[in-house]
Amino acid sequence: MPSAPAGATVTDVPTAGGVEPVVARTREELHAARRSRTDGDVAVVMTMGALHEGHATLIETARQRAAHVVVTIFLNPLQFGPREDLSRYPRTFDSDMEICRRAGVDLVFAPTPDVIYRDGDPGVRISAGPLGNVLEGQARPGHFDGMLTVVAKLFHLTRADSAYFGQKDAQQLLLIRRMVRDLDFPVKVVSVPTVREPDGLAMSSRNTYLTDSDRETALCLSRALRAGAAAAAEGPSAIRRAARTVLVREPLALIDYLVLVHPSTLEDVPEWYRGEALLAVAGRVGTTRLIDNLPISVGPGGGALEVFTDVDSAGA
Image (cartoon, rainbow, N blue to C red; front, side, top):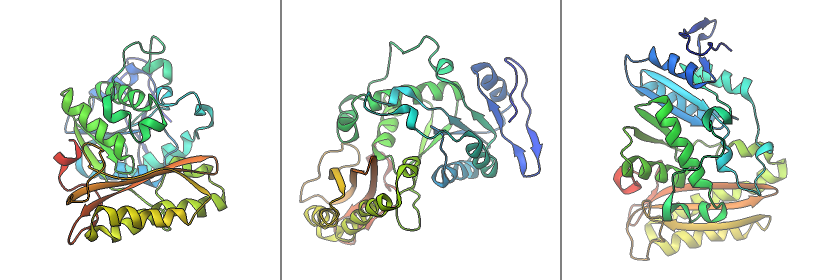
């Protein structure tokens, strides 16, 4: 894949399949490539690599709405805790580039940690605050601080006008929106519905860790969410009960949490609540920890949503 020496002007390389994405690995290469893309909005899709069709959907959605699309591929060490194996995370750069090419990406920024963190482990980080200490934050202390720190840096480096994130990582999406609003980043955050396999399993890079039997077990997560959504008209207790009934039938799934929470506070919704809520589940199947969620409209006529209809209520 083509890249330019530091400070050089980078040009697109035509291929039989269209235009080959420019690959920038340094800040200088990124800045040179970014300078030639000022004739319209620039969208960014941030990834840690191991791209799949869920990422492709993010890219294609961005491609439909923006003049230029930048994809970042960076395995951020700050997001991994001491008990999480960073070395185990799949690295599939060649197939990642093929997805980027098919989806019409203009520019891929694929730096190494020393490019992003020039002085080593950063002494100053962005704090996720109280919202980063619950649910996934409780299970993975410091994870969201590391995530927000690198997202902020990539916002600055790519100078994107908009950024596209999947609804599957609902707490991450909420925190990024809060950071953008609270710290006045000039970026529009766009949520894209969760992409699922035909059997309902939410697409994730971690799915590659699942054995065939693990995968069958993992389907209880999406089944529980659908069962909860089907009971949405009856209220919060019925939603939780219906989802929990599915999970207890699968003893091989070790569930960390099943919650029905307000989409902007992540606090449990009371029985009288009517409106949009997040039904979220996390658990371990085999050696793999998986998360999934479903936006739900609670109350008469309620049910599953693709994304929250009221963006402000979701923390934007």
